[in-house]
Image (cartoon, rainbow, N blue to C red; front, side):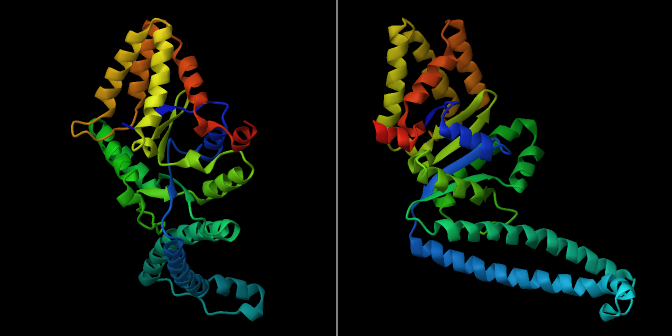
Length: 313
């Protein structure tokens, strides 16, 4: 089962998520270690495609100046721009619909690629690349359109694919229908934070970051293959509760986690707000400050300690 816990409110990671993930409730991060040559090849392919799209868009815009009478109107002001009046007919309406479609489809793609170019210009192609993804507009629309009784299972399927290495290793073209949109702006800021010693690159290992009512919760899928890391956190919690004479609280919590976060086929499910609510209620009934305890445990995790803090130890 993936390690899951709250992100300390005062940590650099929490500050980063609050600022750059404020427009989404789910963020997925991982470190891309595919061959640099493969990423450069994909970038060149995207460059070629975007040049073609830019040429097509420019051509349509230039033709639109004549097609919709823009130059005809400007010609009334300046004779240099004199042009014949446009033909107002049904084919013109069809051209208008086509232009709107092309503009709405290509402009976001080209704008997204500009962010890619800026990222590559300033940060190049590192051997281990920080990747941030958030649900695309199409994915959000699909989630909202699902019936309430099927929405959770649909969301779980999306999250399973998001953390599947075979899925997220596929090169992204930034298409509107993609399930996940790469946040290149956040990637650039993460590199700067690493250079300044604020947030380690390792903090962004494969994880799902979920915005809850009282802050961010992280499901560390990158630690599934490292049971010692998860066991260490659980062991600390067990020791604390045992020392307080509340060992039974730990047992009840583990039963809830096992029931709510592991599917029948053994695959991991995301930690939902319902799980947080049930566990918090268990702690409340046993007069244990759940928020303070989890905050102390999360703060002890080196993942949320800044690079500069590590260096001074």
